[in-house]
Picture 1 (tube, rainbow, N blue to C red):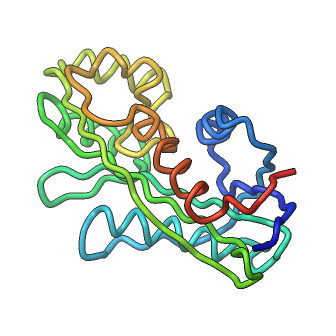
Picture 2: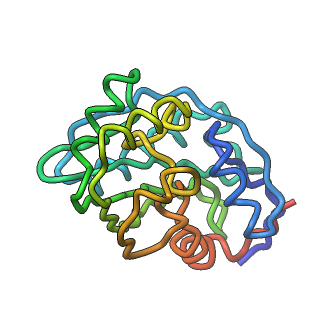
Length: 200
């Protein structure tokens, strides 16, 4: 087994994921990739996992033996529907109305792409799931939240670490996953597959 000095690269533009990744106290950089997300898979978890992998494989650094790429994708699932990022305020309003007084699932797919201990390219994926229940939301709650603009660019049209924290009646699972990067799952993947790496 060989030791590898590599760069951990987050292929996401999300400031929330950057802040969460910093908690691992590993050296890393950020280089977002441009990947077209898909919206059909066997399950919501598989969908999040596939989109995370697409982001990593679309990186300009894919195949670079000096890097370990980290892709992530978060979606909301309820009943048979999957919610991504709203396209505008009307879309966000509909999402929040659907989530009101209901439990939904938050799934984040992860993909790590780098070189294994033998020098062979390795792609590993996983996903984490949390469950969130919203209290009943009034029309005023939703309108006030939409005016804040916090919903923009957020799966399910809300940010649990922000003003929408007051919407949550119950949360089961990893809060970091709901924010956008499940650190417990990520630590496990790094320990299992990239323990030979030193991140610089």
